[in-house]
Length: 80
Image 1 (cartoon, rainbow, N blue to C red):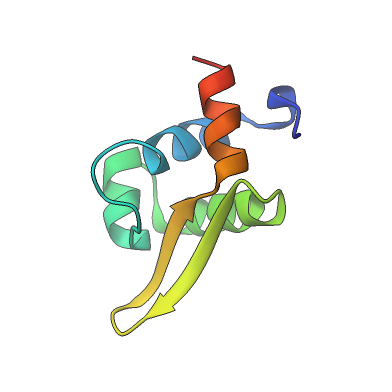
Image 2: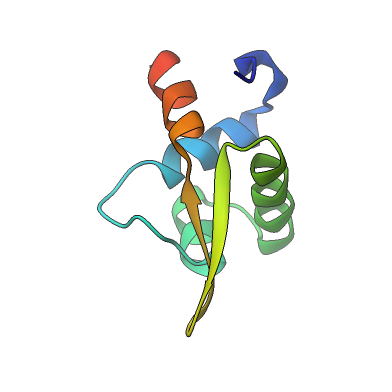
């Protein structure tokens, strides 16, 4: 499992907001607003979390949607 110390403050915040709320799949724009960060930072952070297998992405008719993986959820749960 990924060591929580490997994640910076932004990655931790994005992962927590990705795992909260009633929506499973989130758009970049919608998630950016909730996490209160700019689009460039959000895109880079989501790609980083995907490389660490803490988040994932799927394509849909409405574009790319992001979600927290089980591994990401375990990391969030372990740090709360």
